Length: 426
Length: 179
Image (cartoon, rainbow over all chains, first blue to last red; front, side, top):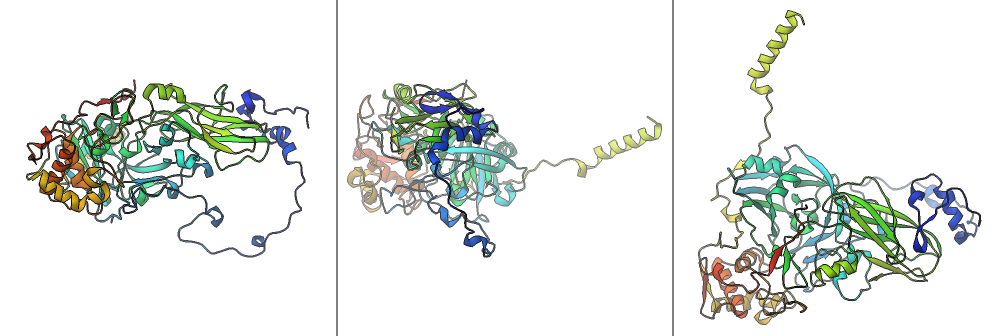
């Protein structure tokens, strides 16, 4: 087995990162076997015919659920600071247990300030007013008659990965650190269509968006975004938007921080200047090292995370492993993702799984030969604007650690000799 | 092209031009509404005070509203816990300090306080306070932060003029729109 086979993967970076050709060539199995067969040398058990092959299965179901064997693949959330105010906070997507680029709707992260409202679509209305020629009201039925568009877009809470703003690395997994991130196929009406119908007053420069939930969540966003790629969404992954994600109507501002994609959308007011709502002043502003805070930090800048291996997914002995993760940018497409197994001393390019879409999650994969020793896994993404995900040192040098929001520095998983992964700063 | 064909084409063109039913309708399904009829939803308050309703409230009135409806979550005198702290933190926004972000130390506009309390608070009964109660509780919180005196009356005229210490504490994110 020591003989090197044709097509066997070659090292591409330090500590076992292999050339990504392994994902592109048909010699995957033969090549991998050359490296990994030694780890699984024992012969397989004889095959028996299982029960489910010898009896009929169950009947149809009205709305399908995952296998009961997958009951651990669920959202998780921290207990609320105040038990008297449930539904304040967020639940997180279990990225370590998922693959592909689309987040199942039932696992899309949730963020609410006053719980999830139970909105009757018959009674829901969207009003567009302010600096317009004619204020207009739309029912859901009205909105459903317009030409529709679909796009796949990620949403990321501005507070995602906020745990990495701490000075010391906390013992948290990918869900707890990076779980405020999801990606769906959204369908709805272009916002520009509706604004054109209302007639935009030339004095209008901003749009206030407001939800119908108890908190009346509201944010101001620039009018050019409304006319560029903003949508009001009726459907998520082919079905009506889930209640926690804004049923029956949500705003989508592709690439902008999650909070601005106002759920349960009831009102759009065209104004000449931002309203300075609570969530664009006291929250969602980034306090820098100096005594100023960045305000109106709209785009999610280029970022990536490794979802596998990650804490809780212990490696089963030395040998071949796929390193898999997600990369995204609110400024466009992902151009490249590089991975490292030696804490960033050397990187090699990962394979980007098609399709690679602007402002959507991009799945990446890399091949790794774990030698059983300590390793520090990292991924570093570059987007089509040329922006490169900063190292933690670069990130901290620019803004310090007082910011809470928009943490996008390279993240690290330490691997110990037992194959256990943990959150580390490297 | 023969004459007959040309005649047919011309006739077809005339028919197209003359028949409204064949011209595409732009989809227009919004229903006009007057500003008065949408007033109940038009609750956002601009930083200049645009949208502030009639009414007024005093610090003393606000103290009573706060004790009854806010204190259980925001603590005595706005000290916080279990929910957000509203008072104090002066000077902690300065470089290298651990920031304590409160209405007094961090919020740049007093109008945001009225807007947010009226739409979202108290948590279990949002939009239940009268405009007078919102002015009053805003006055109480601003007074606890030392930003207005104990005898101040807040209304649509006086609220936007309250000077917030961190008014100049913000700068637009420098990398948007992208170059």
